Length: 103
Image 1 (tube, one colour):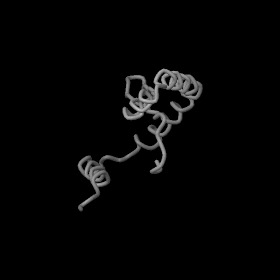
Image 2 (cartoon, rainbow, N blue to C red):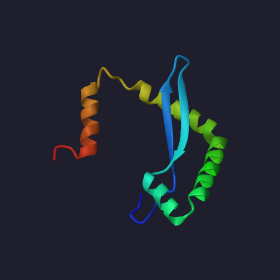
Image 3 (cartoon, helix red, strand yellow):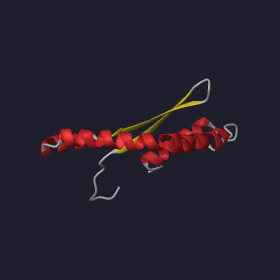
Image 4 (cartoon, one colour):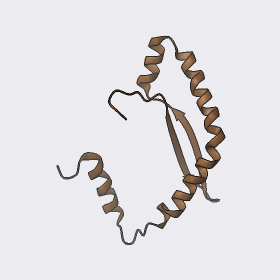
């Protein structure tokens, strides 16, 4: 996000493996600071209604989003050859990316 911008809402996608395949859950949320701002502005009720409307709009495309997510997991993530990549190396790469490598 740009420095002079605000995240009005966040879309989260949760994936849980099941016996049948995957269970997907889409959610709308916001950062706690934004809730405080809306309350301070006196528009907390209107903001909650806005998020409710966003959830309703998201439901209209959630099936397609779930399908795209399923395809990505099956066609990409599940095809990673963990014999060629050790879990330790993968985790090290993730930690290096998050914390800036060997600095």
